[in-house]
Length: 293
Image 1 (cartoon, helix red, strand yellow):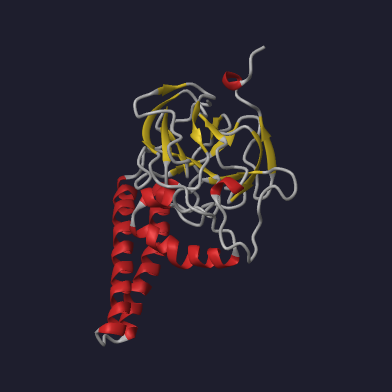
Image 2: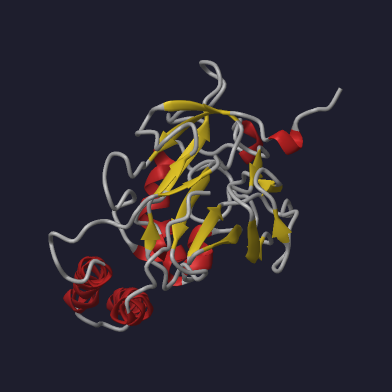
């Protein structure tokens, strides 16, 4: 791994990252309560729009202010130096929501995902179900990424592991996508970061850099907090837990172990770079997993 000490999170950024999510959740709860009250208690329906508007303002303001805090407030401040690591997967994959196209890659700095990337297996034509009207949902096993092994990107120490959340059905049909964005994503955000990232593994790579693997398959984790792992060592399997429309890996580097307070850190995959949206790439099988004659 290329050594590049990550800047510690700015104290103001830490406070904001703790404050804004809680405030946003409170506004959503107030909106839902007032909306229900408009039907059952005669509360004016327009009252519900006040906390909803505050939720939008908090979301936009939180991203802008935490972004200013991590760059020191200067518009000309340089981005953190990218950290070079191995690829977390093997085989042929395609990139989605890539930081090579925009930053923040997912439209938010929440949960340290400023430079995060999503990747799905890129098999032959027709092997990966696409969007459509029918069926409304598919089992996770219908997607080629489900169950694919995930590998350590560097020699590291495991600091966080969760793999008890279920792998839900896909949300790739038009009806399911509407439900996902209008209902499920909102409800999951009320549950905090762990309900958004789902099952996950966090590695401490040293020099203040941590790697997060999100949406891991339920029960697949092969490591526990405190374990030392080597580059290419299997950690678990790709799944569909958390805020996910289909089985995929959400990968990111960050400057702390807690996604709720960490800032994102740019990455480069050794021999691959940072694939752009829709770009396919092939990662070699780690030497530790290659079959020996």
